[in-house]
Amino acid sequence: MPQTHASRRDRAQAQVAALELDAALITHLPNVRYLTGLASSNAALLVPATGECVLATDSRYALAAERACPEVELLVERFLVPALGRAAAGRGYRRLGFEAKHLTVAAHTELAGQAPGLTLEPFGEKIEELRTVKDQGELDLIGTACELSSRAFEDVLPQIRPGLTEREVATLLERRMVDIGAEALSFDTIVASGPNGALPHHHPGDRPLETGDLVTIDFGALYGGYHADMTRTISLGEPAGWQRDIYDLVARAQQAGMRAAVPGATLSEVDAAARDLIEGEGHGGHFQHGLGHGVGLEVHEAPMLGYDSPGRLADRVPVTIEPGVYVPGQGGVRIEDVLLVGGNGTSEPGHPLTTTTRELLAL
Image 1 (cartoon, rainbow, N blue to C red):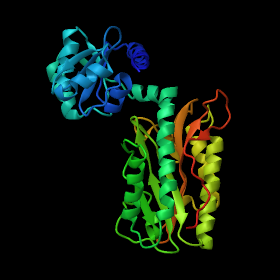
Image 2 (tube, rainbow, N blue to C red):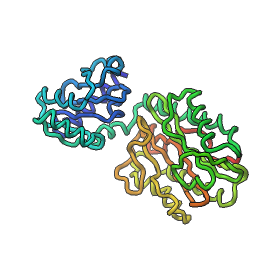
Image 3 (cartoon, one colour):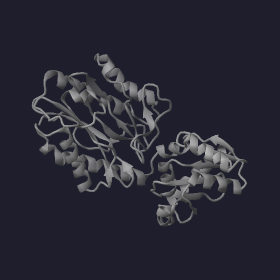
Image 4 (tube, one colour):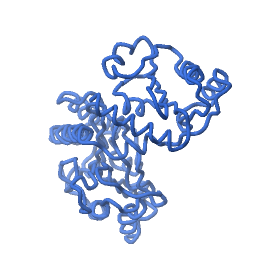
């Protein structure tokens, strides 16, 4: 995708120029990958307002960098921030942007010491803004990650039974995702059974699943560097009335959120579509996280759907819609899908990329 990455760098350079900077230092690894194609644990990119970018990495990734981004000047160094600081000073730059959210205080101090003539200015999250709207290649990779996640869950579902521990269920699902083609996991799988379901980010432990439990399973496959993120809640045995009631509530809230997630909608409006419904049923205090988030090179990225989130949804933006109700001491329900907002050039609601049924399954 050399031409794709070149186009992305052109847009990044336009942002640098718009801020009247000479260059920006990109140190957040997903942003470096987005602009160059290089997947690395140690890389940074100097993006000038005009002229050639400089990609810095160490000797472990030099060959990979040459293959991924042959048209960009390569600097092979172990300590990247000071090296690119010196390169910026050597080019005569005076105003250098930096990613304040990602550059440590120590690295900032080191950068200032290496290039005393540079004025360092926060660059904001300009690259994350570029990453929000996905091109077709990105959507294809996210779609495949979602397909693998859905298939793995459906394959493992018949094996889930009372007596298995939360950790054993997580291991079955993680192994299956990799077996059918995932390059890795998007994140550590969550399996929360019975009263543990009241903890949105419960870490799966040795609790055996029991008949009568609701079991919330939050998982995702990584494919081509892009993430999936989905959650299903199942019932072991016929659900009790209160369990079916909160499941139905969460399902209706998710549908409301999906209908509201159209290009041009404010992020807070989308959150409110689901949140108001849950609050209206008396469970507002049992839903305290945001409705969802963007997915891409990171499993949690812009835009964030929350009650106080600024901004609006754009076309071709994949976001999760994941309302939940968590009742302390009893259990909880969360249903989550990756929804492609727009994608067809209209203001109609998008479609889920995760395809497993959202009906309550009683095993």
